[in-house]
Length: 576
Image (tube, rainbow, N blue to C red; front, side):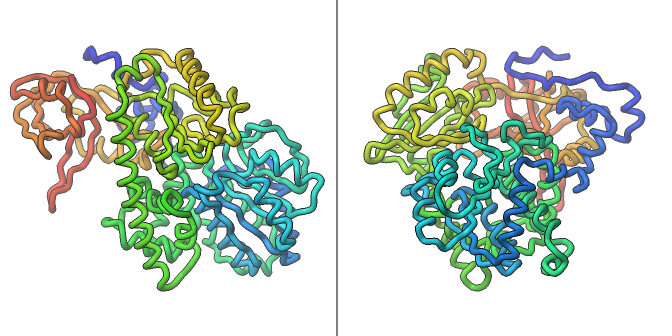
């Protein structure tokens, strides 16, 4: 075993039975990779590598789903007017389109309202609910990807006339409410006391389960409106929402995303199909990368720059209008990228991050100039670059609206809960949050968060770490291990792409790319030679990259395709 740096950390492997390697027709390398992901029995290995829809959990275990289903079945038979209220991100947009398209197939009069990020903000607000109630138009409202913590509405609706509310959500519960309340029903795997076996569904994942429940309770005349593969055909959108919202790709999320990726190749959604044809090159093998970096950013861009209506329309309309929508989304996405770069550059050039990382271990800032729609992804850029939590606010008319992102070492949501008295609105997950508050509370918030960070984030927590699965010899690298790595796809949160280490690699040759920002190497170890590439290199790396030098590398294995030639290439993440 090579003595690697302390910040190269092998994923914890549980002991596996020696019989397992002879019993299962997979290599010891793959079995050990799975063990590092806590998949150690024959049954677990088979179900992980060959996920099926039979592995999906029973929707009936979701809190509130039976009550919610009973209420919407009444609405369907009574032909009630329904308002769907959704969030403005990709998950909320997809959730809204799923339930909207479903209700329209049933012949119901359903309308959708997605709030404006800039003028209204996140979640179902009391002023909006009162406004809708005063129109006496809707008898039922369905909130998707929001609503769990709309405490004011939950309280108001108990004693005041207005539409009943069904919530399909997946955000953490931060307020207490009456679970038996029949006119405000919450379906959410994260509710306190929930027995649902998997809490990491996306908002669209919860909405999908709700649709399953409704279909089961409809009479045969209504069921005839849906083809047998109707539910399966929804999984492409559920997959996009799951990846876009960075949900862990394990358990039933893995099942739905893996199936959903296959469905993307033959999607029946007209707008999604047209977008895929317009923006994805390899349409036969759509990957999680295509969702995370091409499709989802475009769906999110509308809500970040203007409003999310065009993204919803893409997934809910047909005809010539789709071409204009796709062009608009492309333009929004380009504008988003430019704004993001400007803000990030301003923050990095205007702050001493060496000092911030060392002394504060968290970055918090506000500006009247920033576009609040991109603050979440700028915060994410800061987290990736400096490995500390970041919270950014847009200041306007005495109010602050912001987004936070965090590392896996710091539970942002849990630590912010203690400061809830400072906020006007607050919600999120372990590594992401949204906050609204009065600017007068900023100094107190800043000071308190610095104290929390100082207490909970250690010096070693901010050091950039690299997790790897196995130490390999170059003799172990072949087509078989590459094929087995592909069995682990899709990669993402909760199921990272495997990485490896190899020591004592001799540099035979190298050359720089893109003005010395990247480097291509030819490495030899144990008599075998592989091409390797490393991106975004720094001065430290350049000092090591000398022909004849021997280096230790941490890397991923990929297939490099050049014309008709396919070779194995190593993508180096770190070296010393």
